[in-house]
Image 1 (cartoon, one colour):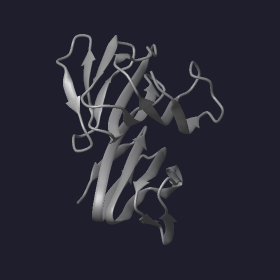
Image 2 (tube, helix red, strand yellow):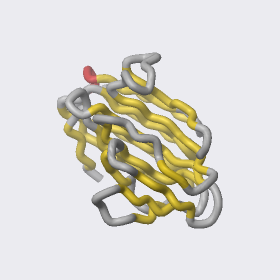
Image 3 (cartoon, one colour):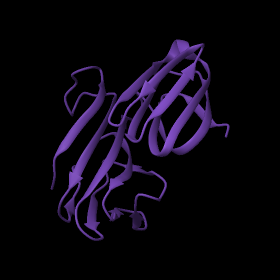
Length: 181
């Protein structure tokens, strides 16, 4: 159905049947079934293209576009995608139930704050433009296509600035994460 590019996985180098969490991008070039991943929860966002209609067994179908919120669903339920108008590129976050949990925030142009509490890992993927992430007196700059990984010892507020027209995908893994502004 398309090509997948792994952004990050834990444990490092884990195969598809052995990860605790996995973040990737995938191209979807035709309508069809999604791969089934037993015991996995998944969140899907659209990066490029018009979007797709996602039908997950037992749930109402949803349309996902570049402007809709990330959509979470069980990856072990039969899932079918129908393209709205041509191929798309999506952003996938998958976590193994019982081992990890996740939450995805999409941040666009401007200044944002996130509070990390009981954090394990936060990954920030800069899809478009540039971003700056500040925490505990440290600051990282991200260019388009780069990912920052922030670990547990960083508990406290994160300051995120996204350039004009930019888009940053922030994935909170096994933590309590809530948006301040």
